Length: 247
Image (cartoon, rainbow, N blue to C red; front, top):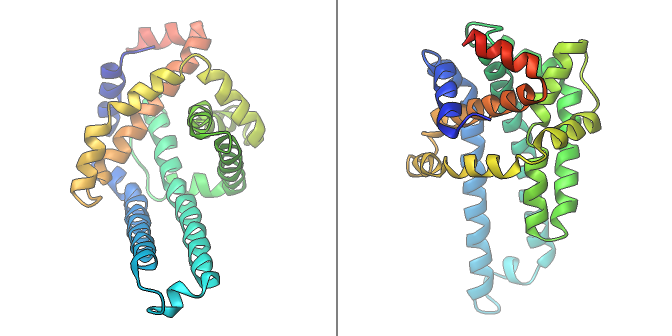
């Protein structure tokens, strides 16, 4: 496995001269992330008003828990939908990063790179919701198991891409998740530490009201594509040797 610095350098090489096109792919996730944060702040404000408003005032908030619960359900549903749409664009970044890393293409191609995800929409839909369900169930056992499993499933979308490249069709969702678990066995801590190293960049996105994510999201995603490529090469010594000769 390459060091974090080496992985990030490979990501920078992928982004070099293409940051503008990657930023276009990252616009929708940025907008939806801002929307989720705004909606969460509104929900928090409503909760504060509900808690501290004297009984009898703001009757619609305090006396009718049905509408309050309905609003909370609506917010959660909205968050799932926005996550789903945002992830669609992030998966496009994942796949084009992997192709650039492997030198299967020379540049980001819009809107063709989005069409590939759209062409395999059913597989993407199944992968998104199956992971969401599995992680939700694991999280019921406490927070830590859910976090650990999120790292086990982290390579699922990359596995889908490779399965499509090899066979011409997407592997089943469970096959992709199982393959991701196998690849991540013994490597979850490494990816966790890699994620921690991006905290300053995440903070940059925060203080720029999300604008920084136009560059941070592709950077993080491309770095994880390099991480995935390392995992695959470790399982195939012939491929690893060939890539070392190429570089």
